[in-house]
Image (cartoon, rainbow, N blue to C red; front, top):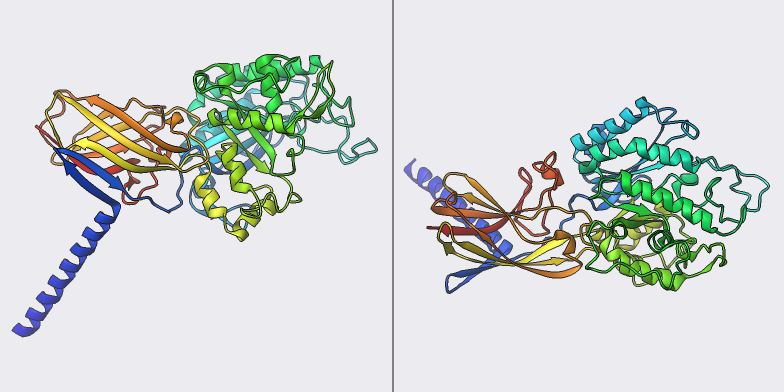
Length: 516
């Protein structure tokens, strides 16, 4: 009996020792710490895991008609936050973004009703409760009528609204958009033409073969008036997206601006709140052809013809897109193999060059499914937008309360873009004994953590609230809005092993600081 108990004790001891060994091994794989002259350097391990992060990735498509309003469903949005199959896709995605197409079909010649405005507000509230953000677009029609016109498959009248109605509606929507700033990722221009794509339109100049074949000065002025009203209606800290790069050029530099003299914004202008810094792009025919179905075409004006400008407008967009919100969808699989994975195609090369933060997972999956079949989908899933890998942190192992705490962080953004919305970066010191948390804001702009390596050299000044003890260190990148700042769904997760705390949204720095 004694021998049996002894064997049991030996087995239990072996289990404990083995578990301790593997736990130590796991920790050693997550970080390596070296200490020199009282300063510690922690080296972190990159994670290959795919996971949800706010304001980036594949979005879910939803639309609703004002004539038969069906609200968003919170449980569905929460389900999409997890790993679920794409609409008509052979792949799965995490979705923290939901595209919301508001079709104002019964208000083409009338003010928006109080009931419709309340329904829109309710959708934003549902998104907030679900832990996602919306990409709203307001349109008047998505219906195509075929006929005997030159383009045959789509003929006028198209069914959008005149400028006076558009401007009235934007004024009505402004309070709703202001209140929903926290759960708006970016607002797409919409309003003009079928699908809100600013092309087939009854009131703003029909540049198709069905109409005048180009845009005139008064057409550009009318479109610029809508852009100006949208910028005014959207909260100042949020961007809008236009369908064509030339739309931004002609708004910023005037209707006579040429594609050659309309310059991209500079880093000093980026994120400044200037109108030019708040206009990004949605390409709804990404990788559809040499010029993405007219995306990079000069639409002309009263004194110039419509003409090709593919190279110039592409170069403009590559430079400008580094600092603004870029997204869209694929639309045609005939541009193959160019729209396939590398090396046969250039899908990831294009996403990186134009700084894509999000794409539609519902359309066109004739294109997207090939990325899964050909092996680059997982990489695209992880790299759309930002993906921050913490490489190294340097800090003093010991400080005195009331003194400064210098901090050095090396971050590698292996994503295609940086975050396009402002958010704080915070250092949290948590007392290992009492659990008290002291929070310090770091002096860095996360929107400038561009693709590649960024080194943040900063310092925080402690005070008497930092009592003596040992503190665990965390990096916290929450949303800037108090309404959702404490929700972990809206905090950024680092792509490192062993750091994420899903309950708080904190990233554990796996380091301890002694305070005297």
